[in-house]
Length: 336
Figure: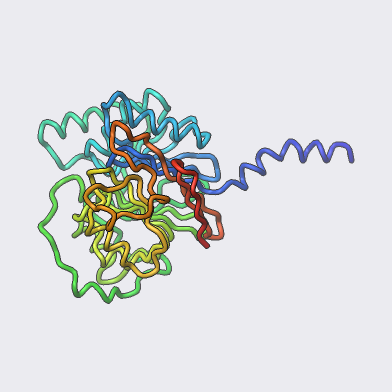
């Protein structure tokens, strides 16, 4: 029996090593759209959005390359935040490169023009080949190893504060409502991803008025460690009331060179108490040097076609510590 015990340990070692893995998140450059790959310690994967279609399969190729780096051979859960071409346009091309098992979305599109119908029907033609999960606020995406809570979907948000949240937001009195948004942006599926003590939020392109419902009159979410900046850093999202309530340690902006990264959104994050760094997928041309972070934390400094599509990785441990890595220059920063 003594000689048999080491053999058992050796057989169990691969699974033990797998269980010890951290949560990895790849923010993939799709030139102002979204494609965010979550790799759970369980080995399962969740991709939020697929970027644009066309462009010689540019975005699908970039997602597939990041997935290969992460050791991902299939997408267990594809979450489509909403039906705009920079978020759902790449489904067809991605499905040719990686099998997709579960499709998660908010249901039917609210946009009924011809272009919107074609886009939605193209997506559903691939969605019907897998399992469809239509979510509403409060639901959970059942990926193993991490907790993925749906905060918003279909134009609605969670009714009650999450455990530990619910504190009054003193800044709500100064909130200025904007014109109602009847587009798919306001329908965005917003997620809170939790791994142990680590929390990361992704609200898709949820717009100004809908964000308010999450943090006013009380903060229903609580503080987060990483804030994936809403709407690529466009000034139609990311109010001070939201960002201050989230109180992130790090913000990660999935902007393009000329889409998102607005000076207003950048400044709001920069001025938020407790924010240690703002990482960006691109240098935002409109912001100039005054409204862009240091080059060390920007993944792509050039515009297309010179852009190489570099990604930023978040690696989080169960105790809440995490680090970010810039694939362009191999710069890494750890956060307690």
